[in-house]
Length: 157
Image 1: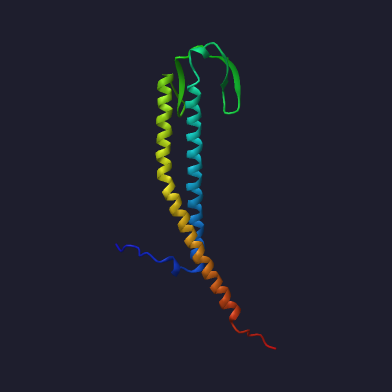
Image 2: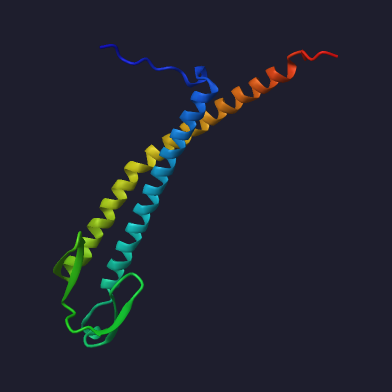
């Protein structure tokens, strides 16, 4: 079976360049969105880790607000300052010591950082590709417009 041959983008026609530009823009949007979601998740984990550091024997039996959802909190009392319940995803919760929970959140922050490090070069590559396609597209469009404007008029006078 014959391998498909690569064609330089400068040899593509305007409709093909436009389709390629659209595809690359979708890829840039996807990678940008992925980076944004990773940053949000990483920040939430950092906040959780920092919040755990405030739990100590002095906070026992203190009034706190307990999150039921991301926007709804109810008053509660912190009765056990040695153990916390950690949401580990997909509806599973695990009881951990505060130290174990801090370590868990730190591992998750680092893991997401590694994922961001993998996505970032792909995003940069797609942005550079988009820039090249747009440049060639605009050049070809200007050439086509110039060719149309220099054609002699065939109107009858």
